[in-house]
Length: 319
Ligand SMILES: C[S@@+](CC[C@H](N)C(=O)[O-])C[C@H]1O[C@@H](n2cnc3c(N)ncnc32)[C@H](O)[C@@H]1O
Image 1 (cartoon, protein in one colour):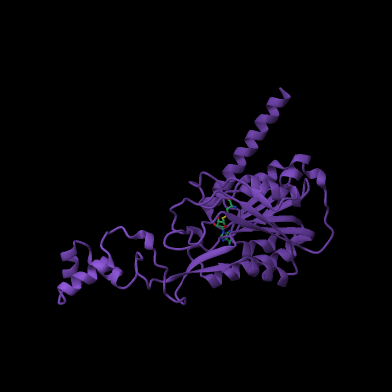
Image 2: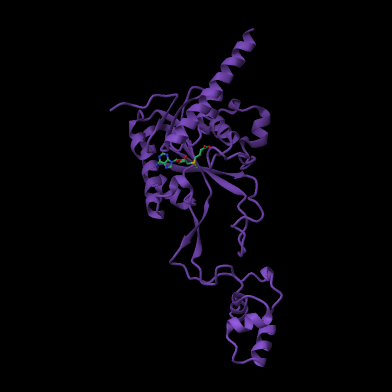
């Protein structure tokens, strides 16, 4: 079986390709998996298949990581997905009354015209039949009170369990404070739930010696983020080539903290190539794996551009 060479990116599923990495060669694996939120690249996953995929990939890390190596996972800890099994009662949004017809007005009309059905009452009051129904049934929810509910679920505990089963220990957790989602996004509509503003960075350690080397960071970097739990980093502004990129600065910080120059950094969910690019810029080696052909082409293209820029820069410095 061929082994995966460093400073290359490969197209395929990580459940299969991770077995082709030299065992014990990876100092740091940094990745952001699909979040099970309905993106195009996870359209075929069920909650169960998604969990199984994460479990398998985490298990394979116990072989590819070197002793003392780190597996760092960026994920939105709080998932929200439709669940048929949940009780179907949704919160009533009082502030959404756009039509001025109140329940009292409808009850008054019903008293005057006791034989009117909902359509006749609607004609009489100049509103829709749905408004009559909503007001009379104490429900002002678009789509209805008995729609399938959204289940909210924490993911970190599952990652911790899968890692523990693979002999990897939770070492630390940092929080990425990103830009809040847009005020009117679907996450806020008709609920009391907060707009998502953070993502989590779970750090797992494979038992073995590791180095604490403060000189990997400048004094300012140590003070600003080296030992800080909350990392304030702007989200990626342009997602037109890949729908879920993380910022290069996030990858840069993880790489500088948890690996050394020349170490091999892995990303088994490479996407547009952000981790590989940050690794290259920080003088680390990299291996990237991505299942979608179009994203592998994008990652290769992004890496080629960075290499070319770097070569031009070196030529200019010599001249
Ligand atoms: C959240 S995105 C990662 C984005 C990346 N961090 C970036 O900045 O561009 C997850 C990526 O994993 C890929 N992916 C999903 N399942 C995979 C699997 N089993 N093996 C390899 N890649 C997979 C998806 O196609 C997607 O590009």
